[in-house]
Amino acid sequence: MPSSPRVPTYGMQQRSERADFYIRDKRARSAETALHRHEYFQIQINLGGDTVQHIGHVERPFPRNALAFILPHRMHLIPHPADGNFMVINFSQTFLLPHLPCDPLDLEDVSILLAPELSPFRFQEHLDFILEDGPFAEVCTLLQRMAQLDRDRQFGTREVLKGLLLQLIGTVCGLYAEPLKTLADSNAAQASRRDALTRMSEYVRKHLADPDLSLKTVAAATYLSPTYLTHWLRKEIGKTFSELVLERRMHMARSQLLNGTRPVGEVARLCGFADEAYFSRRFRQIHGLPPGQFRREQLGE
Image 1 (cartoon, rainbow, N blue to C red):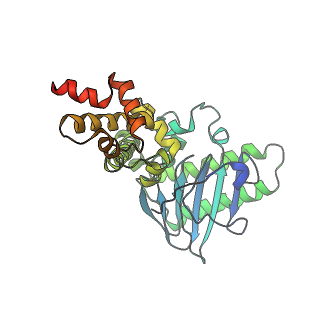
Image 2 (cartoon, one colour):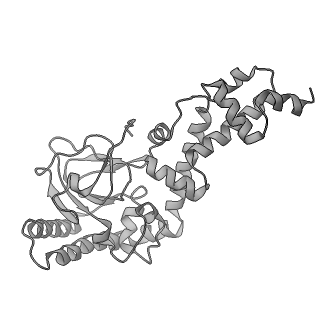
Image 3 (cartoon, rainbow, N blue to C red):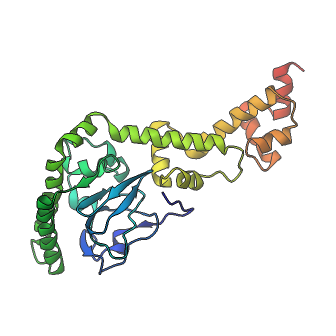
């Protein structure tokens, strides 16, 4: 997947005509050409032009007749060919799930029994939603109806739009019922999160000596958003990113001090501290002794 030091996050007001629901084709607004994320739900429908979709850390095929279901804050990119054709539906969480007062970052943990309409969004990284011509024609009829209603909204239109949206999602859920239930039973979303955290942990380990190591660089390198990474660390490990990095650097520093003869300044640099005085201050805060004295006392010198 392409990476970027800064991945933009879009709100509905930036990419949609309305704050609750918006449907458009490629003529209304050009497609994004760089990795991005947004605060709202999105469904993309490929009407023509085979391509791929990058979602999370995976790449999946996205040919004609395919639908992509994208959760809020999920980093993604679909590079549509110039001669391709597609439609996009953007909608807020309160539009789809007004009964679910859930943090958008926790949507992956919502049971499909509580919110079955979340199923294709939760498992998009694991499945390709490619429809046969018959069901896809039904989806296109729903899209045309939604586009017509959204252009000329009246009293009650919002409820009809939601009904059509649920019909579209329900059609896909029905066609992919078995693999969706299998993924739900196997806790695929939790496994994806563990895999992401493993990638993050490995990257931190390899770059621990880099003083420029930061939440943003790690998130970009491991195909996570900083928001997701922060949330997952607190939820899975109970620490912030800074706390995790400092803990690992201090562990490395202790090992270097007790198993070598390098000067304190060199140990500081090896552990990712550009400033020896700052290293010594943080080391003393955690261990109660400055690094040099810690070494002498531990080794009985």
